[in-house]
Image (cartoon, rainbow, N blue to C red; front, side, top):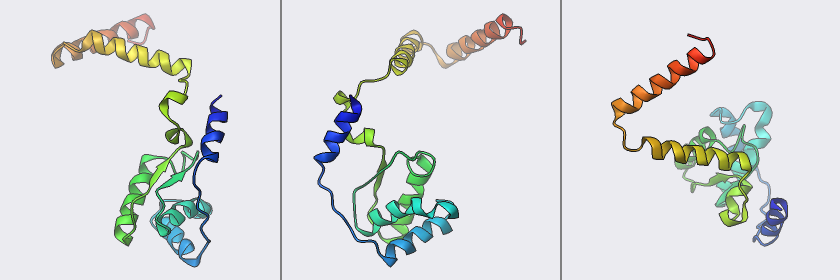
Length: 148
């Protein structure tokens, strides 16, 4: 279901094809020199360099290890500011799809329900009461599993 919506969404995007250039290579090399991407993965810096050079808004990637993570986002912002480029957004395809079109997996719904219950149970506690409760829960857990 999501795959079909993603494909449909991508088909409706206005895509601009930009030429590869020496400047793209130079910016990608800066990503390596700044240790933003490893030397053996310089090709991962190419989409970032292209987006900066051609003043694009987004880089869309599934690559969480090298691209779609807070470290790369911050470093790209710094490099863009230092070199006089517009900041770009590094996102996953999920972030382009309207939230109503994404069905949350059952496990995530359960986690959100647990968090909501926990919030309701603890929202009126003082900091001291909350810490005391956490310590009691830890003691119970350790006793239950013979870890104390």
